[in-house]
Image (cartoon, rainbow, N blue to C red; front, side, top):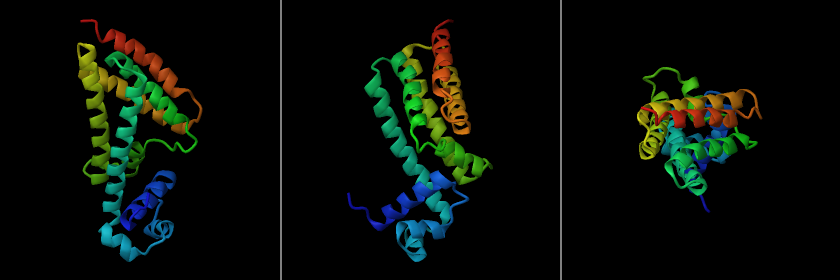
Length: 188
């Protein structure tokens, strides 16, 4: 696949933002990695902030497509899909390149809720909870939004836990708690 210059810049920024952090990555490092110039970078992205937003939007799209495909390949009922989410998360946490969730990391680096980077990060988790809410509704949970929030909290906690201490089996323990929550969600 041949990348155009804009894609090369975005790919370089993506790699550096995820591996080194957004604030720690300067424009000079991005242009060097993309083998281009600042003028070219600013031709496609009017500011570093615009590049950060593009990085997060691309990460959202790519991750969600991959994630849903993985869940669907592992399960075919709503309950099984809710549980498969934890298996997919566990596989993702186990990859050597794992450096946490790009959205949690970005929200931590840009903590003000009004900041566009923070807002895009929050959107990602809002959409993720909507996906789980839909599965919880299909499953027949009495309060699907509550179940989705509870499961999301388990997942977010597992991600941060694994980021803090690698090979912690956080996703496995989160799945064990999820089984209880999913079963309890049917009780009126």
